[in-house]
Length: 247
Image (cartoon, rainbow, N blue to C red):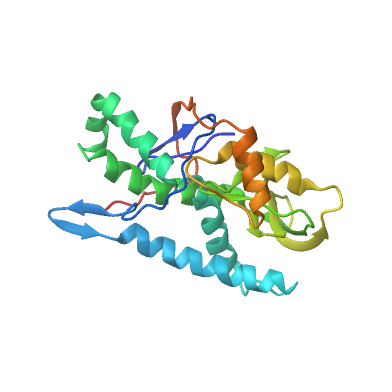
């Protein structure tokens, strides 16, 4: 289950590594300084996606059926969800480190800095995977098992093409590409898929984990070791992107 990153022509993937995180927040993660100017393009882009996701969560929490006005609203939501593949601090860190160790690759990107390449690729890779996702079936799951949340909360194409992401402590979303029209459905998590999601959240986590139950966090701290990373970068060509975003 890989991750992605890079510029308008390519994206690199990080194979799943083992876990390790302190609890922390990070400032200026998406800021590029270029020609002495601080560029906040990516932060502004994320703000728009986060607003769309917030409205979506409000609606599905009330079990509303008319969640999207049009394909544009659904597209923005999907971009917000898929962007979690590429927006963690660790993802930036491992990408920048890769270029530092393979500096000869920078000439293929017009000698852009590694940070600029990674920032641009967040938008490009998100756009590419979003285009590949349509049409999509969405299912909102109500669960009685408290859900964990982490810095990398999207469980992408885990089983039979299905992806999962927690939305609230007791609601998670699954989505999958379909051959028909895009749909949205509501289900009860009778098979306790939430336990599987929590296990995957722990596998994905790099910087932090959140739970509404203090006892659960203490159990995690006592029974899990977060100290070894073995992700590797793989580069591949974009499939659907016609022209990419550049700072």
